[in-house]
Amino acid sequence: MTRVAILNVTGYAGAELARLLHTHPAVELAAVTGRSSVGQRLPEVFPHLWPVDLPITDEVDDSVDLVFSALPHAASAEAVVPFLLRDIPVIDLSADFRLRDAAVYERFYGRPHPAPELLSGAVYGIPEVTGGPGPDTKLVANPGCYAAGAILALAPAVASGAIESAVVDGKSGISGAGRSLGQAYHYSEANDSLSAYGLAGGGHRHRPEMDQELSRLATDGWSPLTFVPHLVPMTRGILTTAYATPARGVPASALGDAYRDFYRSSPFVRIVDTPPATKQVSGTNNCLLHVRSDDPAGRLIIVSVIDNLGRGAAAQAVHNMNRVLGLPETTGLDAVALYP
Image (cartoon, rainbow, N blue to C red; front, side, top):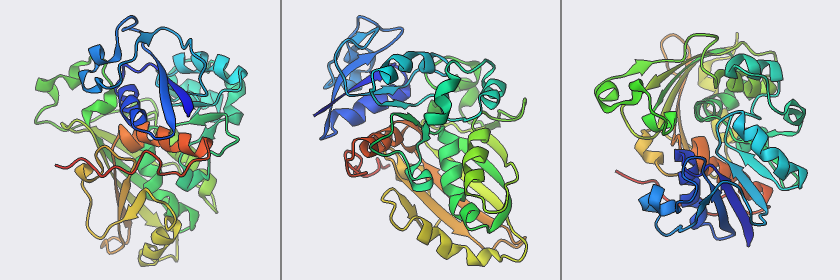
């Protein structure tokens, strides 16, 4: 049994990780840390986790075989270095190792990267698109939630050289903002309202992830995305709509089969005939994609839905852990979506 630990279990992503790992047949959740709740037991902070009766400590004292970090950016990079030096694999849910260019990280996160020497060795963790991680991987960069939905939506079209640019519209539930307080997330501010955000200063922090990974797939260069995120008054879920302009001479109608071929062996991605809803993936690592090629303007329209705390965070992290440990990808992740 592989012993694992969660750094910063007291955020939403950390709590979702604890829920998934508790029932995982091949691992034991051995230790959890939390910066503001040290000394408490996990069910005192999250009563729904009453079967996971672990003490919340300030450090991982036990011997563990793999570590998840759900710490905020910058703090995460600093915390995981000691584990990497001990050759303990790390799956990082923060933004610290997603971007390969330290200068881009500094621009979007407002500070120099804490461990730039580790960037080249990190594997960006969307296996269907990047092919990794694998059993030899020591550092996995878990994707951002918006980035996961957008990259899965556009990867087949980009890899086939069939599109030249795209506009991405993302709509996320409020849990994507984490447990920290902010006026925009108060009930009276968010309820019955829909708002765009993250447009200033070069755009939302997840956009450079999208461009970085899609440009690796592009056969003939890649034009940066236009990305606009929106806050929706629901708890969890992301609905992404991508509007892609076909490359010259490539009809949008030729791309439907490309999507099915690209994801043919992917257990978590399904192409559906009708536009999907976020409830259809709640609590899972699944992504549903709907592809339309009959837009009057000739654009390709792709709709994707994921759970921002599942495929956009904790379930994706478990998916990546399974690959690092050499387990079947679906181990511990075969639950049906929570509905309604």
